[in-house]
Length: 199
Image (cartoon, rainbow, N blue to C red; front, side, top):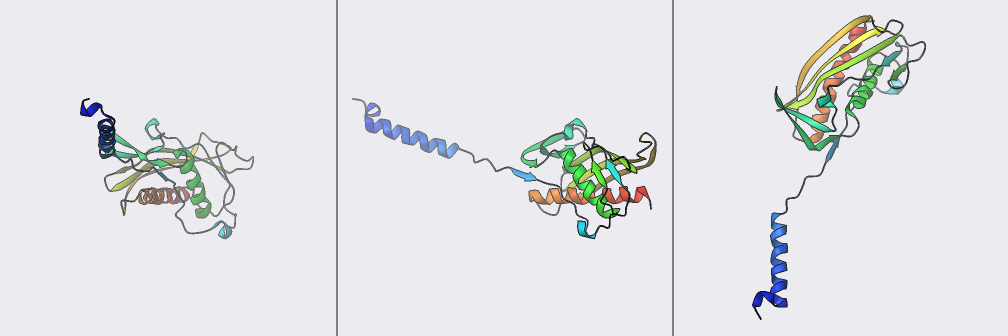
């Protein structure tokens, strides 16, 4: 009987095959889920609610941003979607949620409704937001967006248009640092929106 056909030879071959498979196996990194958060200091308890009533319409994103994965831009023509860094909620809803929280603090109001909830009958202002860039590039993150304020009774007549385009350095390589830097840009955008609405 040939040695490789014996039970001992067969067992040795299986053991060697298993060791080879283990040596070739590559461990995949675990997926991190990122969440945007309001940065401005203040709490709901400190809001008097005397500010204007607002309706924040659906946040419009280009198709390339309508993804779960965090985007890294390599240049003007190429993007990289990281399958191991994902948003914990749809990005348009996360942007809308944080803008509502930031504007509530900046404008001292509790009267904010968000799409898809319809605006209240006595809502004073309607905000439309269009986001063109919300991504990481190298050691920085970028937010390029536009906010359009209109009175609720004349939603097609813009009262103020706020263009925003800023970058911020990411302080560390941790996934949370990227989400924090993007949240800081979003807070700065909300501040510009609040100033654009005026007193």
